[in-house]
Amino acid sequence: PPCDLVIDAAAEPSVLAGAAGGDVRYVLDTNLGGTLNLLEAARGWRSRVLFISTSRIYPLAALRAIPLATTASRFEIAGSAGLPGLSEHGIAEDFPVAGPRTLYGATKFASEIMAQEYAAQWGLPVLIDRCGVLAGPWQMGRVDQGVTALWVAAHQYGRPLTYIGYGGRQVRDVLHVADFADLVATQIRREALWDGRIYNVGGGRPISFSLRELTEKTVRAVGRRVDIGDDPTVRPGDVPLYLTDRRRVMADCEWQPRRDVEAVIDDTARWMRDHEELLRPVFGR
Image 1 (cartoon, rainbow, N blue to C red):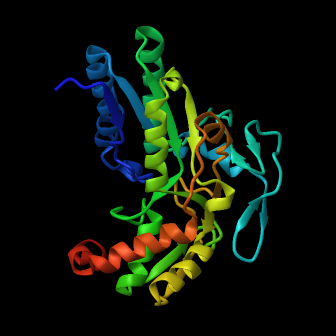
Image 2: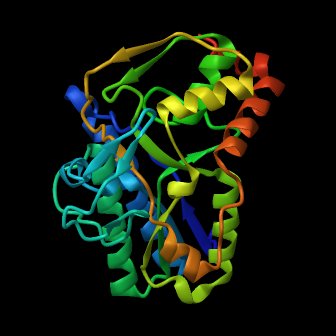
């Protein structure tokens, strides 16, 4: 039935989807086609649209051009290399967007453009949140998305893991799903924000991890260590580092994430322990 708010959080979320001759139409129809269907419905209802986008809209070449320093456990940003929107805080909304990304990123970027077109042409109230890694209980993580749940599950059920491409030093920031829900609730109350604007949303440098760091924190939370292999192959779509510059959304929405990396891992591990047998068909294979 008609409604006054649509939150578009639906997508095929895998960065590898459609690669190597996979089902390209499925990715296009699900992500871009699905959003267009929602925008058309919202246009008829005159409802607001919150589009949940992704950091994966940023092109691979620009992300791979970020100067990096290598420490024992992670990569760190070592300069801006003249790239706009890049600082020690991470990647801001004006980081370059020209260039190939992945089918997943391209469909989400195209959806952003269409949402802004609906805002401009028909006055549809639109807001776009470009999210980094979201995590927490009830995320059914796989090797191609949901890395925190994947890592916790492997330790919980005693399954091996592999560092792929960067020796486990690749870095992502993470945001607990409850902190993201708090932000969405705040944004819903602030109607002045709904003009097609875009926010980069994530935990930023203070709430980030490398896979090596995630391993040690997961061992502490679960109480088990598993075998981890090392595959030097860099897969299509992989990048060594993504950190969200979250300053704009924090200032405009007066919002602050309250849960750190340890809380994300602990909450995920507790959920998995509490539902160990229920989740075994998903994670225990």
